[in-house]
Amino acid sequence: MNAKSQHAPLTLATKITIARILGIPVFVLILIYYKMSLVEGDPVEIYRPMALVLFILIAGTDALDGFLARTRDEVTRLGAILDPLADKALLLSAIILLTRPSLPELSPQFPVWFTLLIISRDAVLLTGSYVVHAMTGHVHVQPRFTGKAATFFQMAAIIAALIPLPLQLFFWIVGIAALFTLISGLQYIVDGVRQVESTPHA
Image (cartoon, rainbow, N blue to C red; front, side, top):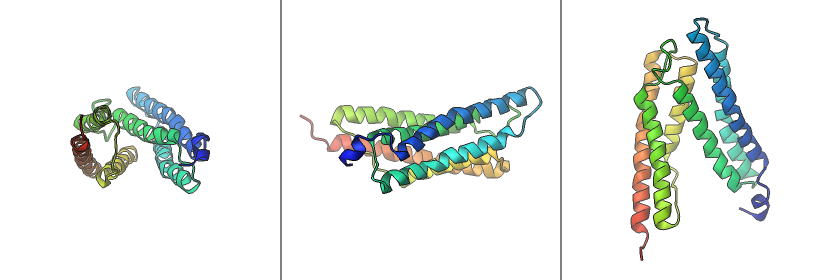
């Protein structure tokens, strides 16, 4: 990271990330309006593809801002903070709004255990990062294939719910996403324990 990137936090990549974050409330609002129309018994079906397109757009530009940051040598601390925040906000808002028993008329929906698994993993990782930092003075997060796979299949499950795909295929994707979410969470916990054990204590 050079001096230029340190003093230019609003790079093109960061602006794209901010645009992604600003798009999340719009996505949430569209889904809420769709669910309200279901409750009123007069579904406005155009909301569903609108939410789908916006979700794909926000999720898809995640790779774009990362690519621009690396190729333009514009990696910044602000971008490093906002990028995962945008991902988590998008995923959690979509999954929570599409979780049973939010609305019986909405199909398919995520089972409650799936949503609790994702929230619990993120809560454990956040708490664990704080504990590791407090005990060692630093936190080293080793990117894992399972973590990336969990994010990919969570996004795929959301897309499957918004399309919507047949229930059997939808729940297969949910099951795969749950498996990678659980495995990645356990791996990050093991990594955290190893960091604490390998740090010399006074």
